Length: 261
Image 1 (cartoon, helix red, strand yellow):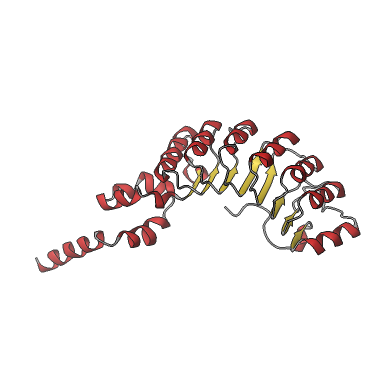
Image 2 (image 1 turned 90 degrees about the vertical axis):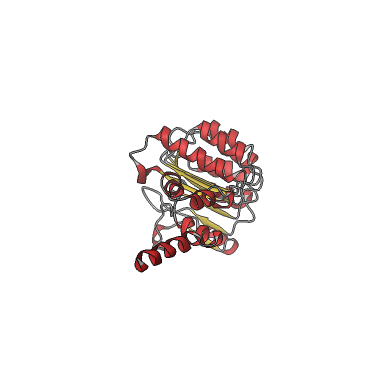
């Protein structure tokens, strides 16, 4: 009996841990899906903490690890997570799912959003992205991977809709070359960090970026599928003088040119 009572007491003490420890040291180690489908069901305390908007300031949702969910089901989980943030969401990543309607929901509920990452989101259109960005005045970081952006005008809309944009990364599904570079140079003058994977064909795009983005601190142009970018000697020198972290040749670094998230 003493052993049983002691075990019950230890269980009660564990469940009565302070919220900041329960939330910060335990629950925040779980991803959004783990919290929504299991952790919040453990006990009343956990459910209460899981509803705290502070738990949902950063949301990372990758359907590749939950392939047994349909895209529609996963989108419903994403909407639940966004609603839990109650407008406090500042950073969200979506991978392998998402629609224009979901982006509309995010932008309508999350005016404080600072960082948006989209990867393999085939059902999100450039128009849907542009409309969502109009409602995100505080956005400073935008990352688009395997994303279909067919026109120069689409890039310009991103720049006009996000005047505070400081970091932009893009790996499109189709080649754009200097067309994308010109659009970025024309519409994103406040950029500090820029990554364009496999897009630069020649020196003209690089020169346009230097002219249009005078505050750049890092520029990564690696990843051309056929060859390294052949920069003019004077242009390369200018890039290295003006930009703290400049990469255009894959052999310059052992870092993976793919995303980290």
